[in-house]
Amino acid sequence: MKDKIDSIIEEINQFSIEDTQALEKFRIQYLGTKGLLKDLFGELKSVPNEEKKEVGLLLNGLRTIAEEKYNTFKETLDAPKATASSIDTSRPGEDSSVGSRHPLMLVRSEIIEIFNRIGYTVSEGPEIEDDWHNFSALNFPPEHPARDMQDTFFIQNEGEEMALRTHTSSVQVRVMENQKPPIRTISPGRVFRNEAISARAHCFFHQVEGLYIDKKVSFADLKQTLLYFAQEMFGEKAQIRLRPSYFPFTEPSAEVDVSCSICNAKGCNVCKNTGWLEILGCGMVDPAVLEACGIDSKEYSGFAFGMGIERITQLKYKVNDLRLYSENDVRFLKQFTGSL
Ligand code: DAH
Image (cartoon, rainbow, N blue to C red):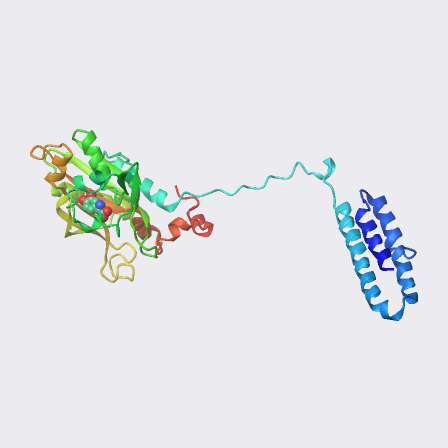
């Protein structure tokens, strides 16, 4: 009996079912009221008592195999097939969803447009920089902490030590080395720092550097340019204030705050109740930097500024976690559909 069951299993596996007729033949042969399985269950009576349990289990297994094969083939054979007449060619098409521009790119374009309107061109430089362009030409002393491995990613390139640029100020060096004043340019780009990733810090982010070099450029020109930028970006009521600061490449240097557009400078948790938000660093280009880049500091002067695109975007769109910018979660990105 056991051998018989085995050979029937084999037979079932071999049985080829290509159409509904073969399927019906299979059903009659194995599962029908006069089918093989019925006979076998009938024979169970004559099996010796001590073997009954085992043979019963085998028979149940055989039935499952046969039923499963039958059901699977029935499902595939019953599935409706697309025929020429079942396709409705007059149905309207389905809309393909429209993508959106990344918020950082929206703000980057807006910054470029604002400065284009007052004659600034766009310059770009490499993300992998040498020490000269990222540090030395910008007056960073050899022992400056920013040169430390803890802040800067260093890489080896054909035996030479290179850095992933830590700021876009490196591009102002390249521009000054290659162009004669007057120079009026902004440099948007990605920068890298060796920081642990959190809501407030990331190992890469974006900056826009600004540079203006000409005869008789003054600090008043810098202030007016930044006020113009703040009002174009945050609305005509925006005000700025400058706080004295220090950067190796500018003298004097300042940090610039814009009046909080979220609470109209009344004080809220974003501006920590001060009414002001820090947006950029700036200053008059240090004569030593002009000279390092081949520009006569007695004839020319200029200003520079640098801002973080993430920061401006945070203020414009109220994005409070830096990680959202690079996670590419469509629920976040979709909110910018339709913005130009
Ligand atoms: N490079 C500075 C930074 O990454 C930002 C900066 C400050 C740029 C002052 C400037 C400047 O051009 O004048 O933090």
